[in-house]
Each structure stands twice: as C-alpha cells, then as structure tokens.
Length: 428
Ligand SMILES: [Zn+2]
Image (cartoon, rainbow, N blue to C red; front, side, top):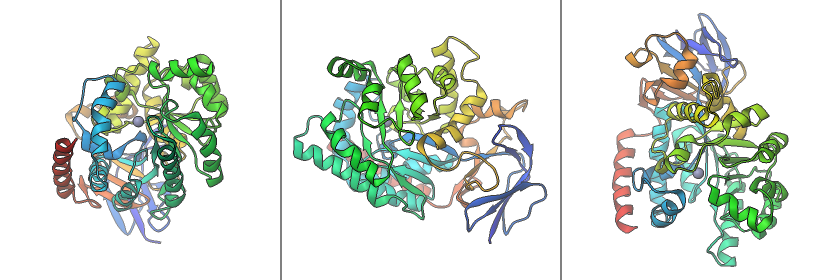
C-alpha cells in the first residue's frame, strides 16, 4: 500500500462537526484508511491553517459550455437557448467540446470539485478530458427530439443509449453514465416510451431537466392533464436512481412524489436567478425528505463553476423563497454541496470517513475574508470562495497541490479555450 497523509489541518466530519486531525489515504485503493492524530504517509500534503473537507460534488453541469461563458447574457431561458446558445452549440466541433471540457475541469479542480454530473454531446471527448483531469463524473448525451424528423430523433436517443453503455466504468471506474433526455418538453413521449425501458435494461439512471420554468409546466398540464412530475412518474423516469435538475416550479403533490419515489433533485440557484426562472422551494423539499444536491448548470448561465458560490446562492435564495431567514441554513447547504449531490446523482463520496473514497479538498483559511473563525461551517456556506482551495485530491491522486493543477496544463488549456471560443463565435 502506498499512502498519502494530509496533515496538520482541521477536518470536517460527516456530522458536520470539525476536529483537528490528520487523514491517511491508501492511494492504491483510493480510499481514506484513517482519520486520527500524528499520521505518517509515503507522500504528505500540508493542511496546516486549513480545513480538510470532502471534495465538492457538482450535481448538474454542461462542462463544455465553459467555452460559451459570457457569450450571451441577460435573456430568458427560451430566447437565450434559441437565439444564442443552440446556434453556437451547432457550430461546436468535437475539438471545441474537448477544449471547453478541459477548461471547465481546470476550473472545477481549482475550486475543490472532485465529482460532477454532466449532460452534453460529443461525450467521447468529455470522457477523455475527465480521464486526464482525474475527477469522478456521471456523463451522458442529452437528447432533443423536438424539431427533428423521426429518424433524427431516434438517432439522438440511440446515441444517448450507446454512450451510456459504452462509457460506464471508464477511467478505472471513475466514470459512470446515465440516459439523458434533455427535458420533458424537448423529448417526445413516444421516444421516452420506447427508450426508457432500454436504459433500464442497460442499468443506468435517467438525468434530465424538469420544471425549470413556467413555460415547461403549462404545455404538459394542457396536453397531458397532469403536472410534469406525475407525467414523469407515468413514463417511468421518477425512480430512486434517477435525478433531475431544477425543480423550480413544483407543487405540493410533486414534492411529495419526489420524496416518496426517492428521486434526487439538483438545485441550480445561480442559473435559476440569472435566467429569472424562479426560486425552487428548497426548504419544502428538504422538509419533505427529498434528496437535494447543488449544481452550477453550465458556465453560460452562471457564469462560473464555483461550488462555494453556488452553496451561498442556495442559502440566500432559499431564505428569500421561504420568506424565512432560518430556512436553508449553513449546514444544509454544505451538506447539499457534498453528500447531498453525491447521493442524488449516485456517485460515491461527499463524506470524510474511513473506507470512503479519498475525494478531498483543503481550504486555506488564512485570509482576511475568512477571519475571524467562529464557525467553519458558516464560513464554508457564506464566506469561502473556490480560489481559497489549496489542494484537491480525487481517489487518492493529488490533482492540485498548492494551487498548481498537476493533471492539466493550465496555461495551454486556457489558451486553447480562448482561441476556440473566438472561432466558434465567428462561425455561429
Ligand atoms: Zn442544465
């Protein structure tokens, strides 16, 4: 066994208490073997003056969209997608997707993110980028059937199925997959009915957008006579292993249905605010027992992939939505950004304990905006920034040491992304 010792820091435990301790990692198994004092390892990471936390889990992203960061802002979802994002995405080549994915992964590692769930296209490129970057991911191809003839729609659904089958278990098991209809209004019922049973046969979960805007709810209520998540349950895509992004416009019946079915929800507060989609009833969902995680969504609607910013937004918007300052408290959002997201998307992690995957971030507390230190969970929720992360570790591999990313060539990744983004804007 070769070991890594993370020493001299304070450690955030699964019950969200903080203890002064060292961590010992078995690098071969990729697991935490001991949390205790005076631990020694073959390799060491200095955590003195730092807080050792589980690597953050970004529950819903389109990582390659980092190439479209700042390309189009200040429009509602429908116009933003149709006028700007879809035409630009139509101009993306496989190489562009690769460059955007590497850029997003660089940003994630720099901010302590060790796992994410993604939906995009050219997924083979994203798989290779994740293999190199060293994080964990649940990846898949997003299906859109509206506006396509039957042959093109079926080909898109077949692609999502093929990707889910092909890449499950890739990167030594760090990559898992899902079948990914884009949303309940952009994929026709007949395609869900035909392909969801095939995804079940392949043993993969379903990841989709749901109830993001009012415009996504009304057509289903009109045409089907039921709320969208009742429709989803009837189509067989509201199972415990499934997870959906947004759930902004959900009613009481839908919240109870989510809790009863055990389907995970990924809350994306920055994206919901920026596109003025609405405020998700996070406190009600939590109280009902729904598994809620946090996601950044794509960088084009955020515009960064900072999990700490997202946790802070979740707390703030949760309070506004409830009209109650005690709603969605600090410990809730810290839990949602770690174990909550991990559980919702079905990725192991989100907790520092013996036997858990060694997915770890070390936050440097030595700065003005983190002084004084009354309550470190409060700091994680409200004051820490992604740029405070000193080291990032996934599966026992050090991905960033002292803010230097070791698995990606930071300068090269940024240069390629800049060049490709300029060319895409010209072609779109
Ligand atoms: Zn999304």
